[in-house]
Image 1 (spheres, rainbow, N blue to C red):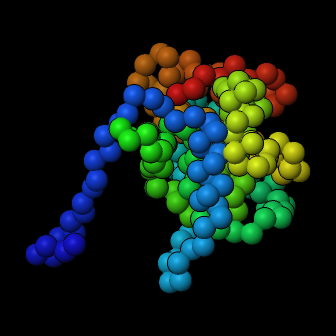
Image 2 (tube, rainbow, N blue to C red; image 1 turned 120 degrees about the vertical axis):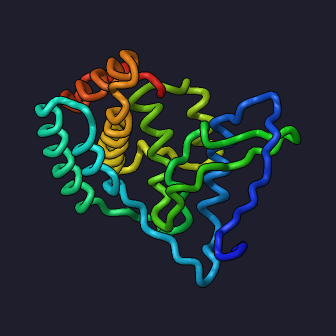
Length: 210
């Protein structure tokens, strides 16, 4: 609403229940989201994995050597992204689809939150988050990821473009964290783990959730 020329928004309070959402629920919710039609007249942007990267690299309190490396990797990823060919139709995409962006209310309803990156693009952008967390980082058990795949109906790991999306996801996770390396030693140590992983793409990932 506009009140005396000022925009006013109203928010509905979500009263949380006593459990967290599961990966199976995330998969089912994304399946339902991706099957929806976008209403006529609603214009949504495309997903842009590079929109904040240059600013992050320029402003982050990191070494110049890291900055040079990240800019080079950024250009490499842009080239790989331009060659990527999707086989799925575009539709509504959340843009940051992980279980931490699900809430379970006191009626045991699972609610998707955080629509900052909501867009119109290929569903792979949503699937890559959990796929990378499992296949590359090992953050979910096989059972948890299996629940996600069964609920959604697809494992992105089987797609030819998975490795490109993995690199994009890991790059974004690293540049997001590096903005805060001066906050404490734990954050700085995690950034060092992640940048070391980017420098050695074949090395096992011992990254920690943040």
